[in-house]
Image (cartoon, rainbow, N blue to C red; front, top):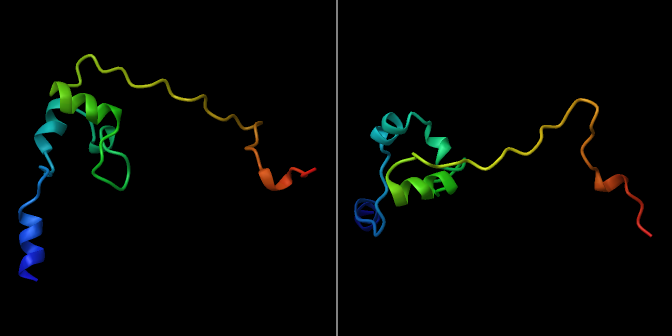
Length: 80
């Protein structure tokens, strides 16, 4: 148990929630981190490199689905 606790205290990568990043960037944590993880998305990698989001351009959002569009359903397609 002590070994496990020591592993959490000493880590080869710095991992800490940084509320000052949120205050400085005026963005929610999810802006730089994908859901369910501490990994960095493109915005997070940009911030890590530049220590700022100034100049970062987020990727264009995909077109939103309208009410008259239906998602593709591969189960309905007949195989030949």
